[in-house]
Image 1 (cartoon, helix red, strand yellow):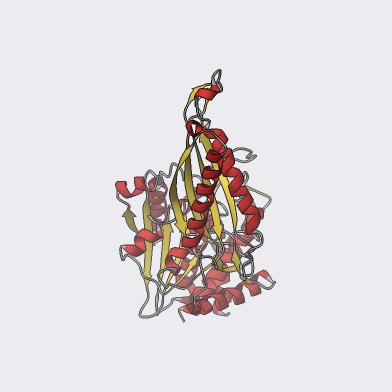
Image 2: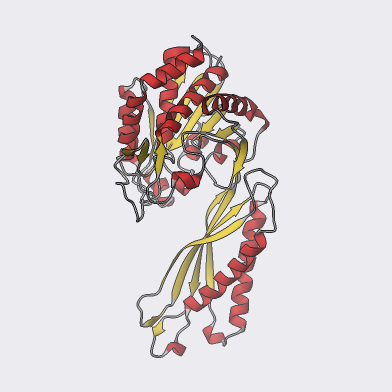
Length: 414
């Protein structure tokens, strides 16, 4: 029997255990915000220890965690050294957006219905804690590598940019892999992704009684003018096209607006947060400067149409600057191995493409570490219900992706 067949057989024999492991991970909430994620890390470490995979625990200093707007983070690294050779890291993040409304299944239940597991992070990306862990176990049980090293990186701040997750581990010298694979979806090997700029805009007016509105400065009216200017800019982005397959054009979204004190009060302050997705060809510095110029001109135009005593002013704060992930030449061994084995196991061609998402994989790539995104999620983000109600994972995809990872590791460490 070939090594590949033995790896597949081991994964099939231990698949029920793998599913139970994932259910345990899903049942511990890691809503981010608030980002109190150390309890999940400690439980994960205990489960890994029970499988003979001790982990190093890196508790991030509280001041650094709070500076990112989070509560607690402990990152994990499992290091398995077999000999001289390549160091391959497998990274998945345990933090998730809060479940929101509209669920028909318990978001923390890990309930299985018709071959699918439901729950927050079943598809993005606690599933790949499971994929990577059991691929590693199969590798050691069957292939018994004598060269290289595999590391599991389980981190907890991808939703907030990754700076106190992979960024912290890399910048503090706790890891320096040669190649890396990050959590993703089973039907594509992702080699590039968008960048993301997030900004907070505070519009300042003057609060007043609604019965005498002229005595105040309506910050909400001012915010509407700014929003209209931004959305007009958004329409122009559709004419900027990326050359990366799977990525279309830049776009902008305003995802949160807060302001006012009561229905009968003229709002004196409005805050909104915008998300600008950048294609790999764009210069992030120029993108940010352009957004600031649009906001500045919108304020000037708004104030020019009003008396000086009704002028607004704004504060603009950058929240996140996530650079795009661009393919590095050294990623070919990863791409080739994953495409070959995924095509064999899934019975269809598996493309290597870009994605409009952004992830913390860029933090590895920015340091010259070739990386790709591949994991157990379904064919598309839409199918997975990621960041929506009733997120789910097809367990057949979990099983098959685990085999793909195990086979690929066997090839790369041979």
